[in-house]
Image (cartoon, rainbow, N blue to C red):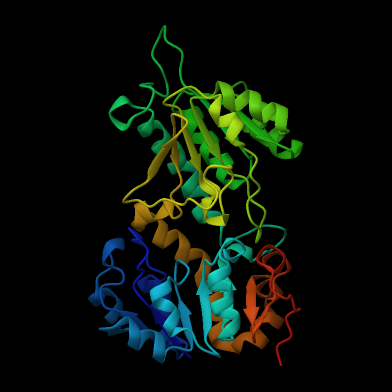
Length: 370
């Protein structure tokens, strides 16, 4: 197969889908890998690094898209890339379609086979989402700590405090992969940390690994409101795989927060998990907005800021399946690795993920590869 890797065009998206080691594996298996010029430069990978392992460097995105059987990306296609979508194309990337009806329609209308990293399930886990979730959780605390400072418009609080002065209160909503990563960093920086979740087992796990370091609270509207009201920094991480994020943090709760407090909405790529950030994604170029005196950080591609780390972590996770699909074709790949079926969001003009169909209003049809 011909595998195309275009340069990412989302604002400040510095990652690239593939690293030279993965290119080498694909080329040795008999596939052709086309990489747009300078696609890896912001991840510390030069064109010559790809060429040395057998990739072909292509000058234009147009040629990469039009020549490839599989487009291998990091982020969803943007409007200026819709013109490249076509019947029979396999698109392998993060898609987050539940909050993007426009892109879903393009993929359905053009009969693209769209395979989403974020919905692939294996043993009840999300192996292609996990590495970026871990990075986003860690970075959420870094960014939150930054915006708590006065020069950034924050309250003027040092996250860890100093002897004789209380540390900041960090409230983390969700104890999954993102929440666990955020909790570890917040604790490590010396903050007072409260974690909320409906999964008692997840809360117990965090309490076990961080004994006497955190407060765990069952997540319900009253407890969320009390915790958010007292917080200096709120990190919202709630995820329902393939679905829009639930808006657990209501505007009335935000109004009760102290001026200069910060909310980091890590679920913004799934539509946002607060009434205020819902549909209001920001970018690394313009990362925040202020409402009710509270700073809202809603960057939809947080890991893109640490591209070298993120690119290698993502490629480590996704290479396995691009090899399987390229070597066997989609039908046989799904038979060998049935978890791929959970990642196919659109096929042959239909939405094939039930959650995406319900959230976007498109007809759902169970995947049936002839």
